[in-house]
Each structure stands twice: as structure tokens, then as C-alpha cells.
Image (tube, rainbow, N blue to C red):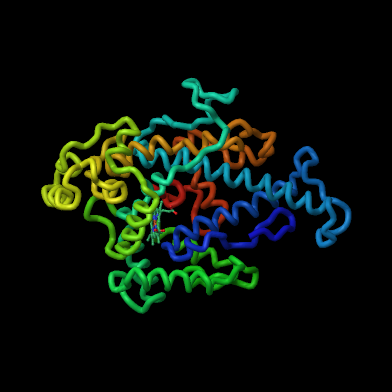
Length: 390
Ligand code: HEM
């Protein structure tokens, strides 16, 4: 990804191969972050705050230690700023959506950076000391029931391209072999990989209009609802693989997980899901609620009713508890985004560029990414830029 010149990364690409097979709006968001990074390092170099990014003598291709440092200083600072914007999107745009604050004017947040000073929050929770994501968490975020209609169709088309068949006709073995082949044949250089059937221009970039259209279509799409019967058929093999993987990891059961988070253990199947059909299926499979495995358990539990404020995306019960417990843990554990979160690290310009303002969209900042990286396709007051998660 890195060009090793002027702190820049290769234009309009991203490192993660798996996301190429995902609905294209995911890739467009990464491309927007890529563009934002390159914009940030250009500005940092031009502003050269306190002489932090002074060009060494000679030219970059000389690769002297001074030029290597120049590139690296710009790259690392640009990364802090861009990831800082991403963190603000998570703590404001995303969190407000989950708990339906978007439908209110409240500015309540869970931002762990608001308590300044010291390594500990008021309740003694440490900050900036790292974080370890548990294996169980990988299952808690597999929200495949939320895949919208267009994205389901996209997934079916990918199967058609890769296997010449519809998803449910592809066996597990064929899937594993096909994905392995796809992975091996992908060019190592992220910029040479195909993306969403788009063509690059002479400057190596995609057409802004194409990216904007994909983004608009993703925003217009209504997400699928959580729920026992809502996982798209196209995800069947992927769900089976997930269940097998979680068994091989010896993960805890649904009730053990709930107990860990201080929630009541289920004592009847009807408590897990009052739908008689679902409860009956569970009974046949597991005999007692204590034996319900984590993967299926998280997927088939009853989901919450919407509440303003309180419940936005209406997840299933256990997911809603664990996601809120986690939502800010990664930020709280990250020293760059807690103890070191200051203009000294990000520069004054960088710090302000990504700052949230509670008087604008109650702190939401995703619009900064869209307006900066696709400036000719969204007006400053565009509903797509300002309300994309609603
Ligand atoms: C059409 C859309 C999607 C496709 C094609 C897709 C596909 C996949 C695949 C192939 C896996 C790997 C399964 C395995 O390794 O056993 C996976 C895992 C996962 N998916 Fe999805 N997914 C989609 C949407 C989503 C959404 C909307 C979310 C959450 C908001 C999500 C969260 C996850 C998570 C957390 C994992 C586990 C990752 C890990 O632990 O490595 N996915 N998905």
C-alpha cells in the first residue's frame, strides 16, 4: 500500500483482500479513507507545522536516511489523523445509530477520551494499555442477517462469477477450493486487483461518479433485520463454517456467555425466542437451553423492539449487551487515541480537521469524509453525506 514517497499510499486501493468479495460500498468507504490519508499528508507537508515536515536537501529517490524519515513522519502522522477520523465516526456516527440517538437532539456519548488525564477512568478502568479481542467476539459481530436485498444479490452474483452456480448449490468443499484459488490468483499489488468491475483512469484512480453512485446505492439500501430466520440463504455455507470453527475453538455456550456478561441464563427455549417454531427447533437440537451453542444462539435469539432513544438497530438481546460493552473498549485501550490524543501528536491542523462539533449533527463526522473525497458529487448539505446511517 505504501509508496514510501511523501507519506502517501497508492491511490484508490486497500490492503484487505477479503473485502473485494464484499458489497462494493465497503470498498468505497476504504477508498475514501485512502483518499483522505493522501489529502492529509499533502496538507501536513505544505503547512509544515513547527518545521516538523521540512523537506531534506536533494530528491526523494536518493532514499537517504533523511528522506526515509520525511516519508515516515508524514505517513505515521497522516495515519494518526485518518484513523482519528475513523474513531470519531465510530464513537459518534455509529454509536448514535446503534442506540437510536440519531432521532433525538441528545449529545450523550460514550467517548472514553472525555475524561482527561491519568491512566484510569473514574471507575478504575485503565486507558491506553492495549486490548485483546476474544474469539467469542468474532461471533458476536457476524451480523449476516443485516445484509440488505441488493447486497444479497451482489453476493449471489459473486458466487455465479466464481463457481458458475447459485450459493446454495455450492458445497463446502467447492467453496473452500474456490476461495483458495481466488486468493492465489489475486495480484499481490492491491492497486492491480479488480474492484467492483470499475476501470481505473490514467492517474490510477477510479471515477468519482462511479464511487459516488455505489455509495448512494448503499445508503439507499435498507439493512436487513436481526432475527432467527433472516440470514440470507447465500450465507448458508459461511454460517456452517463459522459453527464448525467455533466448535474447534471450544467456545463457551450461549448461557455461559450471558453469565459472563451478568445477564440471566435462559431456563426455557421460549425465553430464547418466543416464536413457537424456533423454540421447538431449539428443543429438538439442544434438549436444554444450557446446551445452546454460541453461534446459533446469538443468531436465533429474539430481537429488541425499537425505542427512541435506546434501541436503533434492534439487535438480538445478548448481542446488544456485548456490543455496547465492547463499543468503546478498543478505543479506550489504544494509547494513540486516548493518552496521546492531542494536537502535539496529530498537529493542530490535523486535530481540527477531524474534530467533531456537537453543534453540527450532534458530533457526527462521516460527512467530512464524503465531502472531502467526493467533493463534486455531494453538496455541503447533502442528506447522503450527513445522514447516511439513518
Ligand atoms: C454480503 C455481505 C457479507 C458477506 C459476503 C460476508 C462474508 C463473510 C465470510 C465469507 C466470512 C468468513 C467466515 C469464516 O471465516 O468462517 C465472514 C465472517 C464475518 N463476518 Fe461477514 N459477510 C458479510 C456481511 C457482514 C456484516 C454486515 C457484518 C457485521 C456488521 C459481518 C461480520 C462478520 C464477522 C465479524 C465475521 C468474522 C470475522 C473473523 O473473525 O475473522 N459480515 N463474513
